[in-house]
Image 1 (tube, helix red, strand yellow):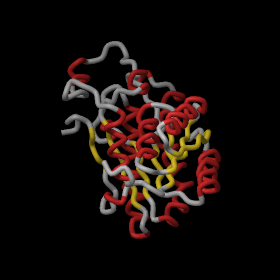
Image 2 (spheres, rainbow, N blue to C red; image 1 turned 60 degrees about the horizontal axis):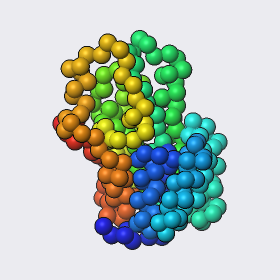
Image 3 (cartoon, one colour; image 1 turned 180 degrees about the horizontal axis):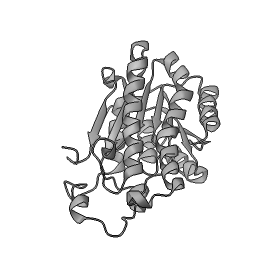
Image 4 (cartoon, rainbow, N blue to C red; image 1 turned 90 degrees about the vertical axis):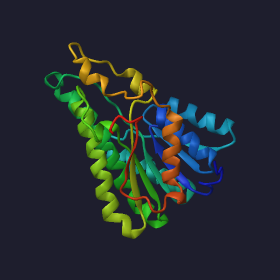
Length: 251
């Protein structure tokens, strides 16, 4: 690994309190970036910052609820005011739940869409003017569920499918101006989010069996490594991609 691949870059990572977001913030710092760690769970976000400092990295915690556009604007402004620029936005914050489609409440549906899709858009909208200045990069966290339908996950699949197309639309709109936008589509990863999923009663086991082709889960650090590559200059020709890292789930 080139430990200086992100040297001098300023990165804002949402969902930094745990899971893939935490691993991404740590990986960015290991590779030399100044990292702004953002999450609605601020104390856990501060713990991520502490772990980065203990490893010799540079990180600052920023509280942000991505469903509130004004907080997204404030998070970007805080990073730029303190670091002078913004080079990378990694939209990792997300939630999910399994339900039979007819059992979703209005609030269930809205909450998943608000965090996963609206939150990604609000952060992108806030960051794009600054990223155009730096010829930077956005990496959105989509999912295998956004590429191939997931049973009992209508809201999650819809939100992540939206993230895929949001990514591609922004990549086309801004690519010629020097801003790259890509998304990562993990399968099952061993994170607090995945462990919090509960399967509803009466599921068809044949439908569920297709979700874990290799019979094992990925690790957050493996996903973070791909995000770091996309954030680096090594990925200068990668734009508008939805990259699967799912053990073959979407083959």
